[in-house]
Amino acid sequence: MTGKSVFSQIVREHRYVRYRLDDIDKKLSILLTQVPAVNITETNLVNALPTHLRKTYLVVLSMGEANAQLVSNATTRNRAVESNYLNQLVRMGWLVSRRYGKCKLFKASGKEIN
Image (cartoon, rainbow, N blue to C red; front, side):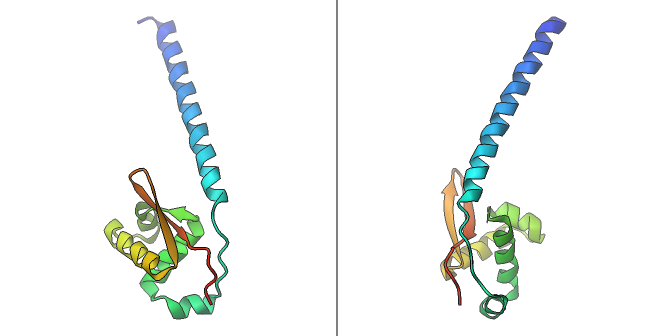
C-alpha cells in the first residue's frame, strides 16, 4: 500500500467513527429528553427505602436512565447485586425498565411518591 492510500483509508475510518458518534449522540439526546420528572421528598425516600436500595435508586435518578453495569460502577458494588436491587425497585414501583437490544435500562417511574 502506498502512503496516500493508507492516509485515505484512515480518513474514511475517521469519518465513519464521526458519523457513528453523531448517531449515538442523537439517540442519547432523545433518551435523555424522555426522562420523567420525579417529585419525591427526602423524608419519604428515607422512610420508604432501605439504605442499600436508596443508594441504587439515587444513582439511577442522577443518571436519568442506566443499566446495571453503569449503576454498579457508580456504587462500587457487584453488577449482579445491582441487577437484583434494580429489579426489586421495579417490582416496588420506584423504577421502570425497558429493553434496548440485549441491555435492560432502568429509569425513575415518574409517579409522585408521597
